[in-house]
Length: 149
Image (tube, rainbow, N blue to C red; front, side, top):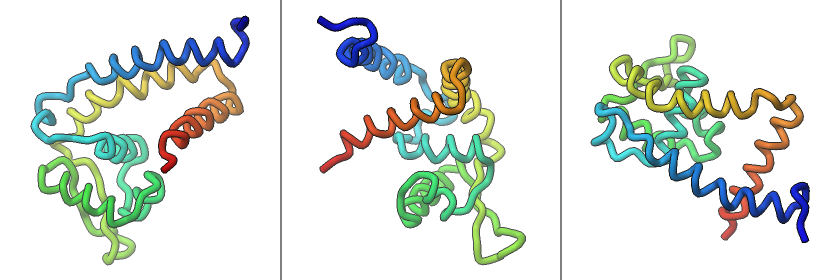
């Protein structure tokens, strides 16, 4: 028999809440301006980073996303052609390009992605820094389980 504090009870509760959570997130429609862009989760991660961290280089984005710079370059090229992102020269090193969300796309992206950030801020607010780290590490381990080949 499992108690509310047991791992089995926690797993049971998570197995019930995760589909509801994912279902609710999937029902948040992209703003009209972004609907025809065929955005995948990898695009959302990139856009979230730029929204939260500001303009970044391809290498910075690749490091934070955990993918190769060529992958980021492909994503950036795709979103640049669609007018979502813009590239500019780095004033300190003209060989590098700085990637940012375009001025025209920023309001729609903020409107779409900020509710998720606010929900996480609300959920994590009662936790101290160590508890937040444990929570994030737990989600990362969960993700790694499914990423195994």
